[in-house]
Image (cartoon, rainbow, N blue to C red; front, side):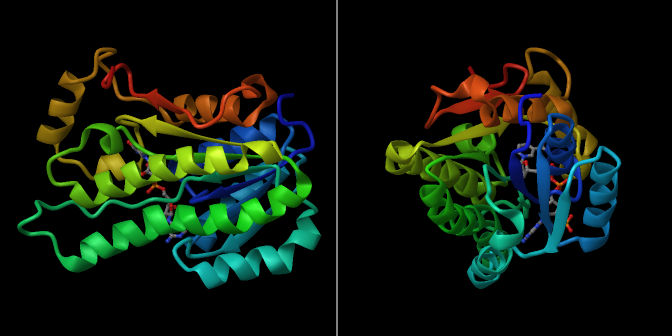
Length: 246
Ligand code: NAP
């Protein structure tokens, strides 16, 4: 077991990639703190984790609300004992061409995708520094590396996450805290189900492995970064995209 008796916190864990990471981590021996705005679905994930005989806690939290995040850690850290692994996964899209993009579409994406990562990194790193150990994994996107039509907001948020990852890796390395990111490509979740057929076809044509990826394939890379197998890796980005970006 690669995460035996670790405590891992995963945001946006009610479905999709976050849920898959949570279940994989539990299989590898970790207890899991599940966070999402969707409480009902989060409870379903918690029940699956309990069946794996791991401890789990669920919280309805908006990652973009700093106060909620700070209060969560201040109130619950005594219950958890520690947080060994933080996975910043919660994210949204609000796609539009810039001429049509509403200010709210820009603000929502930056607030949830980027400020959400800042909030958790800021609060969790305080406790990890005291522990003198920890691992942070941020879920970015290849869109943060190469951009995409209709996604200036999403692309900016995901590129910003890479900036946070590299800066924080430098800040925290001396405290034995590693910070890395993954950049998934086109992965089968509710987020990509929303894309129309034409857009999906265009994306498939751009993938050398010629297929859409699975949440399991993202979770495998996140598990690697969370485990001791990556003990000498920090400040890096792993693309999980079937070769879309080389
Ligand atoms: P998903 O299926 O939509 O899951 C994201 C989860 O985050 C949902 O449960 C969502 O709840 C929750 N969430 C949204 N806003 C939140 C907030 N303010 N506070 C707490 N939780 C919130 O998405 P996914 O495809 O698994 O994506 C997970 C991550 O991977 C995202 O950061 C995404 O940008 C990234 N990613 C995905 C792909 C892909 O192809 N799927 C590719 C590259 C990167 P609601 O459903 O209620 O909003």
